[in-house]
Length: 241
Image 1 (cartoon, rainbow, N blue to C red):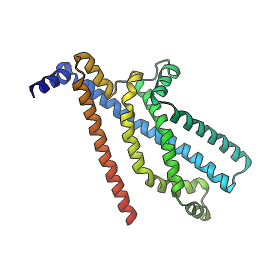
Image 2: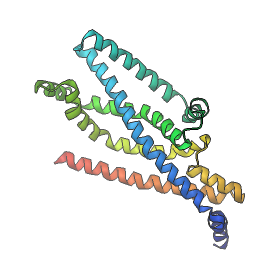
Image 3: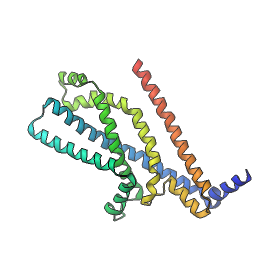
Image 4: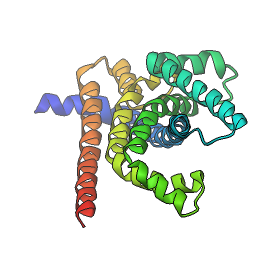
């Protein structure tokens, strides 16, 4: 016990080193929250384009110009999904940091948000697409028969139902993203992992700061996992009513 207290004193209390952990945790949560929002927006846009393209192939209800525009947009979405899902997120972050935002006018945290958001969007897109495709086609036909346009039918009928189906999966994506942000240190971001690494470099004690960081990640994932499970239970209860 005495050794543990000494280790905590050295790694956290001395020179206010706990601030590295708190600052890192703050950046980790900022990146995770805003990257999730960006990923949901991108994912929804890509999913809508791909779903609309697939539905149009079946019904062929658009004019020729709209079909060409939709085909080009669908091709761009496929390229986006292939490239982002086929390359490591670390490489994507490093390309953004060292090749695109070279002027350093954009902060490392913002670059991390953009990078993780773009990466998350590629996976969320397929989640949204599966949710949209799970809605019975009769829902679309019912909306159109009531005089709603395709966009209004998607907005007021299809998307709300699909969102309810995929909400637990989006919660899990948030949990995964928390752990993925541990590589943000590659682009000079002091995230939670980097904060622990800075302490290790000051104290030459690898065990204590790494275990503390691991414990915080574990705590965060457990808390949000419980939240997602409760969300799933509530959704099931609402479906039975």
